[in-house]
Image (cartoon, rainbow, N blue to C red; front, side):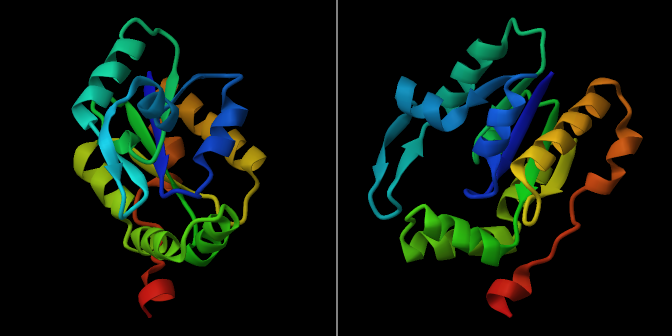
Length: 182
């Protein structure tokens, strides 16, 4: 089973996957992109790599083709990949997200861009457009340990086909647009 774990930068993907790696294989997309050169250069304006999505998809397909255990593909671009059985979008209130990104040393423009993306549900909308099984988990006030435990339980439900347990995680539960644009 292939689970994508995505979300705006700063929502907790890496911290949570560090806790889940004892149970699942983890593919860190950011590390994979850098290690395997799966980009076409740098976007100097944004201070980020321009990812070659087709090359990334091909490399991920190689890594999971013979995998029989559940694998989590972690990264803010994982929702753009195909072959995903379920997708979990981590969500964080924009004001908390801004503080997390500022603490990481993000430039103010990048903080604002990510706050707006979170408020507008950019990743969630893209995920719902591309995948059938999409779920949301809020990370604003919970610890990485609690979120990892919650996601572990969600994956168990997905693996056993008990999707009724996941109704509380269906998309559309959060509206933070007024926090940024109100």
